[in-house]
Image 1 (cartoon, one colour):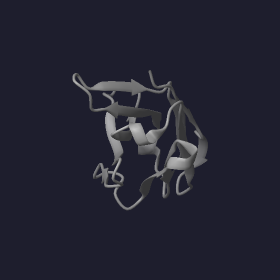
Image 2: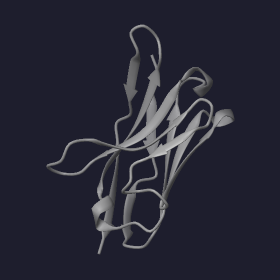
Image 3: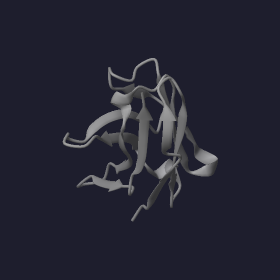
Length: 118
């Protein structure tokens, strides 16, 4: 069982920045993929960014060039640095961990609210 705790959300003006953190209860060396997803009111949850154990990253087109996902293995923490925020980035942001066993196991955090005012 992996527990994920997100932090760092809040209210920010358009053009501002926030850094989200996702702390895992276990060594992230054992986690194959970690990612950030978001869900805006009335919309489906969508992928924001992922990072695999080897360090390769992937981003949604809407955040490329503005958001950066990174991991600190020593702290068992994954970060999402968000710059140039717009009101369209307003959502609850969730951290996800995937362990590629048979069957694969997914774990989610409780989410952190990000609100960008215009």
